[in-house]
Image (cartoon, rainbow, N blue to C red; front, top):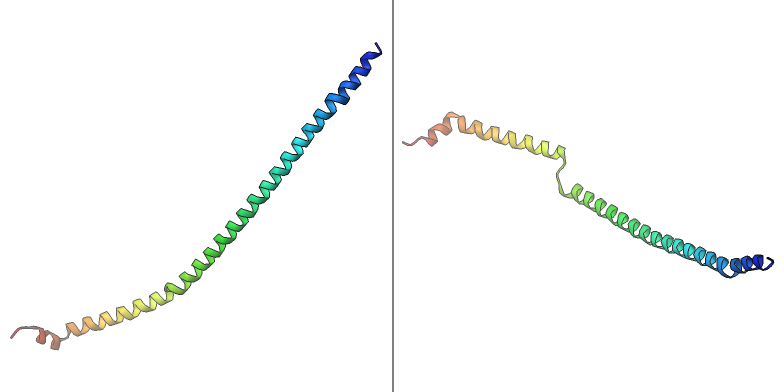
Length: 103
């Protein structure tokens, strides 16, 4: 009966402790690899977001430089309307009717 506790201690020392140590090492290494991969993905994502923000800012600047503003369009519409009204008035005047009629 005294051999039985020695066999249990031997089993724990020779089998259980190395097995648990190996499992602990595998879990630690897996976690370290996962953290490293997560950091790499985070860096790539941050880079992609920064590039997208820069591209959006450049596009906004290009739009601001290239396209007319609402006030400019309203001013242009007013000038065109004024010119068209003057042309219409000239066409409706009696002197222009005589010039258009065949003799």
